[in-house]
Length: 65
Image (cartoon, rainbow, N blue to C red):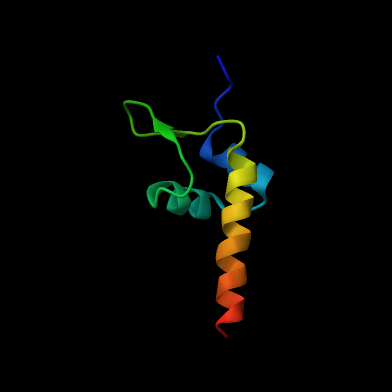
């Protein structure tokens, strides 16, 4: 079984805020699973995906300014 990462672990490894990780997960941009209490768990590749989403969304914002 693969080790699942918490929201905090993904945020630390991706160097983004926990809030941003939750926003991406809730928007369906960052796949996650939830336990019965609603806690999010992410796959080991989630930090890389989160960084890519962050870069894509921020580069788009800069171009429109």
